[in-house]
Length: 415
Image (cartoon, rainbow, N blue to C red; front, side, top):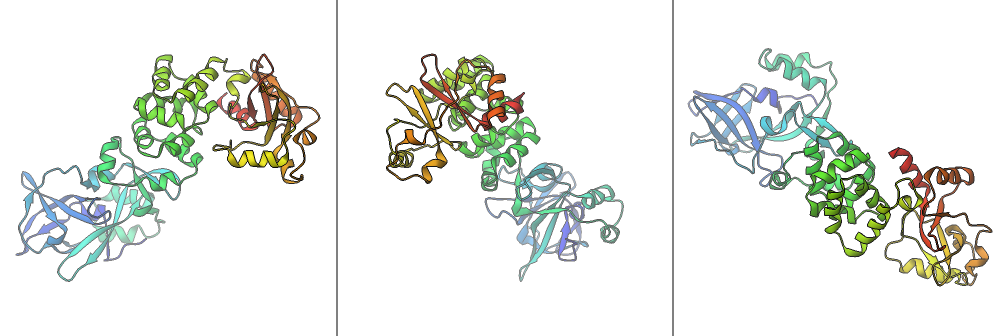
């Protein structure tokens, strides 16, 4: 957006002279601040340097603001005192990383565009956009060297690159300050987990912690499962133990085991101790398997029915399941002791009469591996037979879990 008289850049605003009611200069603008809990876009006050101290000018004390300067309505000014609810544009925003929630990436702010708004008695500024492109870099380089009006003419051929303020999420190392600024994480939580994971991986360790501490634990778990193992480890080591446990509990059992297996034993145990007893034991069992074995790779969430159950029974069972695995493509047929008898592709249920027995739909041969089977053999089976799911049995032939094609792909990425 090309500013006119209705717009000011932060580079225009800094150093702008401030005049009292008799048009005497009392100082120059050093910074400007918004107070998000009062108004998320309006510049609430200007910080003016005059002599040894800074003065605070409220937005409703400004008669006019333009490239010529700021002219005041009254002179009841107060010394500036830092306020924890205040977000200062120069100190807290310029050169800082923000999340472009619309473009799903991390960018660095090089300038800010303000809209000049008018009331009957005064003028004020609203934050309109953050600028991140070459044009804003040029303005920063020539700030204070070339007059602002000339800069606007010279920058014309350079394409603007900016993000509207409502599409930005500010990143700050201290999550408590983030909460006090009252800036929502809604846009982040609506992202696809893979996009959020990409963003978090680009951040500094402090910023990663700030994001993972404040977003919903389920969203954090989905994003964490998409991240590089080294980043996973860094995040789980830095988070408060209770928060780390909350996130791990939202992950599938196999993903939780993989994440904790990369931690030091002491840290892994601290997180496990904060988890629910049942989940804790399931994750512990998987961690005890060797990392290149079927037992470590497998998901322990599966759906098993008796061979003489019908299609109608299977549909009823699936509708009653509280947490059907997203990767479920196969129903397993098991005996009374959970011994693996066969398998039925889920797709066959939709084309068979409800009275059909599952054993009639079962594959002629069900490939299976033991919990001790090595990864290399598992990868061969998936490649040779184009498998989507591979059941895993214990030493007694009982169904212990299943490996999906996604699990094999994930392991390939980890390696």
